[in-house]
Length: 567
Image (cartoon, rainbow, N blue to C red):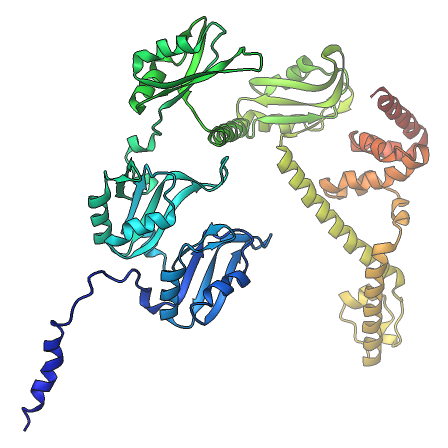
């Protein structure tokens, strides 16, 4: 009786081999029963509503999200669609892939939260020399016979004359390495739409051999030749290096040569041989440049990279060795500036900035500042220490390390913000002290408010409540008054040398300017701001004298007006 069930238990196992195996594997397999899809190659104006209308035809959609830029809120060109059922997601991948939305086919693949498989490169192959008509769908249909495809894409040029035109190469990422190897062995060297394609394992840029990193080309650019060079002459000279398919000399509207042209060879090796032989060699009457023909975008990117590299090299070269000198007298020229700083080390350049008119150096006038560049940072540091504040031609000069414009602007903005915070805090304190009572209800509290805060004086509960209430009202009043109150009573306070020296260096000019501007405004209301800025270039000690002497201030304002009239 116990053995009776055994045949029935074996029956399903025996029946399994007789079941017919499917001839072709399933086109796609969902990773770990996922119900999330990645939707790429979207037009920028595709919305969640459009995607919902499309994907809801397959089954109930749990959520849809179009990824957007955090600042501009513009679409990034891809989205995620989540189904309640993995079967619905698989059916959507099979039926909706490469569906056209807003005149552009979309690309659907499984959403992999773990990017390790994608970044590993396992199962990824590279295809080049594709015919222009082959798109993502055609490439997918061609390689789907070798196994399950995770991703398939043909590279396109979105910034060219024809947006979306194929670049002639693409990528196919298989689920397994075996499928990728089989595709490479079968398709490599075959004809696809009349063109022989190359198919090989995908390699990251850093893993490619050195010779593959070098661009291969057949089109050669030649420039700087004279009018005596014609297309026939170029074909004859360059024909020595190989078979030429086309030659063109660019001409203007009148038919005159522009001095440059193009030569296209049949093979890249012939083009390289021509470049090596002709570059920087005479062609006709002139020495010409010969090199690989580049697209406009590629050439602009190369020039930007070269400019940025030269800029960084220049910054590195003059770091901590270039000095900025200001408050120079008009009599100080380049030679005088070099002579004064020569004692501290070897000077590579010394220049006083002038305002020249139409290239006439004799009529140029000094702007009052210049630059001195040393060969070593130690020499520049010593010059700053010794020369800053020194009298030169009767004026104290300011010497510091030269700064780039963007660095100096950021520093000034930071200093201005700090001054505004300190000024706001000072105004609140002044207004609080101005309205604070110097008495308290209790006889134990007959001290001022500051003493109450600093010393632990015993107070009654009634006194404490009234004092705290007063402090809240005073602070609220101070915050409101700071925004609207006039600062004229602060400007009327006397500013002495000791008071100025006690302030931080970055606030000294601000303090002087606040007191100088109202005085200048009385003399020249329309140009008060510009004239005040000119006067602040003077030494602080001279500005203190101007504040105390109306006659001296009036004379300096007249001098500034004369300079402004000349310019």
